[in-house]
Length: 111
Image 1 (cartoon, rainbow, N blue to C red):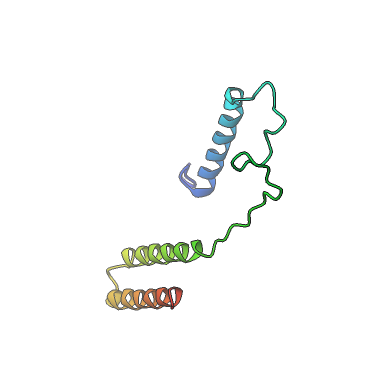
Image 2: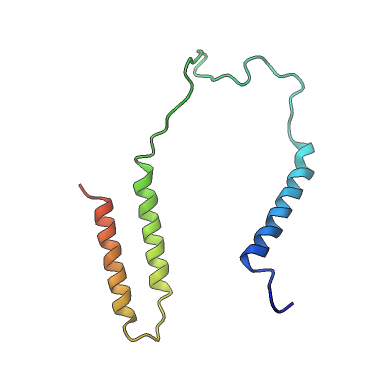
């Protein structure tokens, strides 16, 4: 039992997946299912008018810079916080890493 732990990621993932699947099957009987399905239930609706083309092409151009911004900042905070203090040049390495993060953010938000 000392060789593996329930907290190891693969074992914890399998246990969690099995638990969620069992709960999904057990709670399925409580979900709402209408007895009579109306004709226009699955049609697109826009203010009472029929929409001939209801496929929307979302534009993620404004989302990706924010996603990259938070990813870069969170990774840099993790790297700076977990830098070992026994290394003499730990502050130099952290400073170089944070300088690289600043350059990356400048490139991300260039004018």
